[in-house]
Structures are given as C-alpha cells and as structure tokens.
Length: 372
Ligand code: IPM
Ligand code: MN
Image 1 (spheres, rainbow, N blue to C red):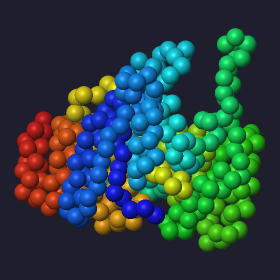
Image 2 (image 1 turned 90 degrees about the vertical axis):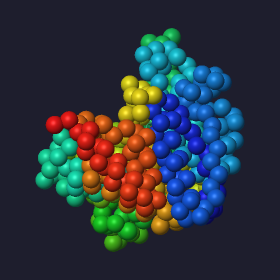
Image 3 (image 1 turned 120 degrees about the vertical axis):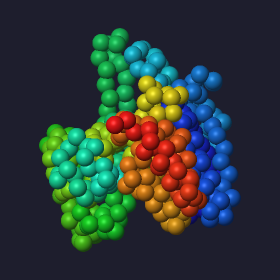
Image 4 (image 1 turned 180 degrees about the vertical axis):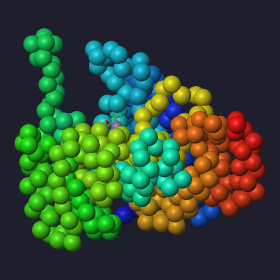
C-alpha cells in the first residue's frame, strides 16, 4: 500500500464545500499533531464542474484523481438538473464516472447508534441501542452501469443489471474478511426470488462461505431486509449487497444513527481509494453554514485507517465521539442548539489539539445559546 502524501479534494456541490472545509481543517490538525506532510489539491466535479467546463468530471480532475493517494469528496447534485429528465449532462455522472475510472468496486458504510443520540432517532431506543453494522456495497457494476437507453422514440426506457462472478467475488471477499474481524456474521441482501443476478450473488457467496467457516452467513430478500433494518437492526453485522440495493439500504439505515449527516464511507479498488459522506448535497442548506460536517470528518478518519494510520484515525473519532456524547451537534440532530457547521469543525479541531480551554468555552457558548 502507498503512503498518504497527496489528497485530491473534490468539494462538489451544495453543502459539499462547507463540509469539506471542516474535514480539511481536521486533516491539517492531524498532520500537525502527528508530523505528517500531506499535500491537498482541489479539483471540480459535479454541477460545479459543469458550470465551469461543461463536463461533470473534467480531464484535469480525472488526472488529479488518478495520480493522488486518496480522494476526498464532499457531495454531488444540484436541483436545477432534477426536474428536467431530458437533460443529457448531469452532475451525478461525474461521481459515477469517477468510481469507474478509479475502479473502486467496494464501498464501505458503517452504521452505528450513538448512546447519547438514541432519543433523537424516530426509532425506539431499545431497538437501536448498541446497533453497529457495516454495509459492503458493490460500487462499479449492476444496474447503475448496465446498458440503458430509450426506445421507440422515447416511449420506452430500459436499464439492465449485469454482474459477473468476478465482480461479485471481489466485493464479497473484503466483506467476509470484515465479518471475521467483527461479530462473524454476514448477510447477503438480494432479490434472488426474482432476479437472475441475485441468484449469481447467492451462488458466489455460498461458494465463498465454505472458505470462511467461522463466518455465519444468512440471506435476506431486499424487501424483507428493508423491514428488518427498522424492526430488528441489531441482527446485522456485515451486510453485503449490490450497487443499487446498497444505495437504498444505506440511506434507510441512517435513521438508526439519527441523521444521515453522521454517516461516512470509504471506497476502494486494487489501486485507488476515495472517502465521502453518504449524504447528498442538501441544496436547501447550501451556503448557510448549517450542514453536519461529521460524516465528512469521519470519512477522513476512514481515510487514515485505510492507510493503517490508526492513531490518526482514532484521534479524529475520539474528538467526534466527545462532541456527540456532549450533544454538541448541528441542527439536523438538535434544532435547539445552533452549533454551525464551521463551529463544530472548530470544536473538533480544538479537541484534536487537546485544547480543552477552547472546547469548554465553546461548550459554555452553546449552553448559553440554548433556548429554554
Ligand atoms: C450515494 C449517492 C450516489 C449513488 C448518487 C449521487 C449518484 O446517492 O453515493 O449513495 O447513488 O451512488
Ligand atoms: Mn445514496
């Protein structure tokens, strides 16, 4: 594995630049604390890139992402593209093209319920307490990337879902390995009662299961899994699924944590890796300093972990955990307390620098701003 010397930062759209600013601040704090020299260079993607160049993933961005050690991404998407189905160039194409270009077939999305936030989830406390699972989502295949198009002059449209054994195996193996290091349980989420591709997933996973005998494997249809994530989330340890099922299950699972603004992710292939929050560009909040930076900051923690820089990663996680435990939160989780995106970034920064004076004074400010 390479060392982490150079990061390409892609702020993207909506709240992307704001949450990225906080994560960059935290990476700088870590670099200082642990004496690393990490270069960060910025490039455009998504609607921001279309506005400047006409392309959602300009060549300069492609080159910057191919030659760095890791990519850190904010968010993609702009409502001006959402309501016109005839538009040919869309921001999301930039992200999909980047995942494909960097051959990042695995996407890892940890889900956990924080004790201090249990009452902020709409789900019952006793159902979500202690929930801790991780989704392994296939990221460069399936219906996202199959042949698609319009027929009969636009009267018909089609998307195709294609998977090869090889594509399934290369995401299933890291999922099994993760299960071995965790509670040794893997659930394949599919639709094998209907889809041929899902039956191929089952056969590949069954074959692999005999090699990972310490891992207990079970299989759930995605419709049932969607229900179990809400009814009985503590049954899950590692969830393995195709591209689209993983997309859907991960947003749904964010309800357990209390906000999608808390969920980080890492993506990797054989060579490249990228770190991005699970949430979207939240255009309604763009430019208002209200977004939750934690998902992006924790994505930076996953980046350090990916490079075996565990102390660095743990320092970030400890600072975030402290804020979460003391309920220093942005408005998505606590509308009564007005901690802004950048303030929360500053507090996490201070905690990483062991600046408890700064931390405590911010806490006092926040306590004073609570409307009773
Ligand atoms: C995600 C997003 C993307 C996806 C969109 C923006 C293309 O929803 O990363 O979960 O569907 O993969
Ligand atoms: Mn999604």
